[in-house]
Length: 169
Image (cartoon, rainbow, N blue to C red):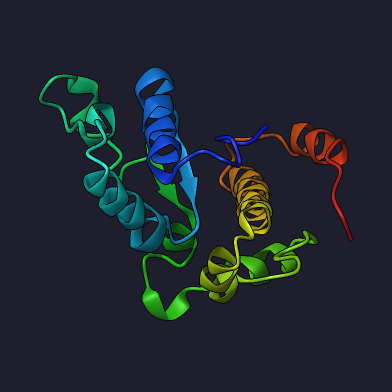
C-alpha cells in the first residue's frame, strides 16, 4: 500500500504524510532524513500551507514531546539511521544502498536519486514512486538489523519477518 494515489497532487501527498503523524504519532525512521527528506517536506508543506501541528510539537501542548519530538536530532521520534550509525560524524556517513547491500538487501534498483528530476519531467511518476518505496523498504530492513544490534529486537522475530518479504535479487 502506498502513501497516496499515483495521481494525487504534491499538496495531497504531503498533507497525507502529516495527517498520519497527527493520527498515529509514529516513530519516523530515515536514512539522511534530517539533512534531506524532512527539510524537503518542511519547505513543501510551507509552500502548500499544510497543517502539521503534531509534527512541530515540542512540548507546548503535549508534555510527552518536550524531551522526545520529531525535530530534535537526538530524540527517538525521528531516528536518522545514517546519523546514528555514523556516530553523528559526517566523515563516517555511508550511502543507504551500500549498507543495504552489505546486509544482503537489494539496495537501489534501476535508478538513483540523481535521476529523479529527469523522471519527474518525463512524467514517470510511477518509477519515482517505485524508487522511493524501495528506499523505504531498504531503510526499514536496515533498521531491523539496527534493532537487533542494539538489543531491542529478537533476531528470530526479524528473520521470520524478513523471510516473508518478496524481495528481488
